[in-house]
Every structure is written in structure tokens, then in C-alpha cells.
Length: 72
Image (cartoon, rainbow, N blue to C red; front, side, top):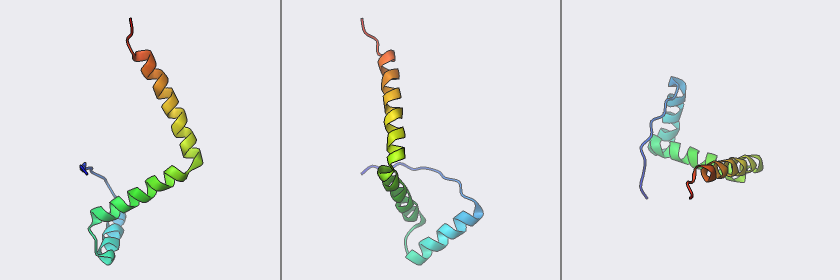
């Protein structure tokens, strides 16, 4: 799987806590971040209200794309 590098900004306290958790779990900080993101995305997939907002957004985007599509 290809990976994309991202930059995040944390407060000093957040960074210190994250580093401590990673150290105790004996994993890289990046792994702790990936696991947290995966948990967040999984929660969104199960969140009915989010899913409804997602469908609404997709429908809006589809309508905009159809307007932009050039046909003769």
C-alpha cells in the first residue's frame, strides 16, 4: 500500500502524552497516530448521522459535477 506523508501540529502536552503512550506500547508515535485515525474512521462508518451528512454531500457534489459536464 502506498503511503502519504502528512504533517500535524500538536500542543506540547498532546505530543508528550502521545510519546508516552507510544513508549509504553513500545510502538512508534506514527503507529499510535495511525491506530487513532483508523479508530476514528471506523467510528464514522458506524455513525448514522455522519453517514446521512455524507450522502447529502455526495448528492450535492454529483449535481455540481453534472452542471460542469460539457455536452453538445
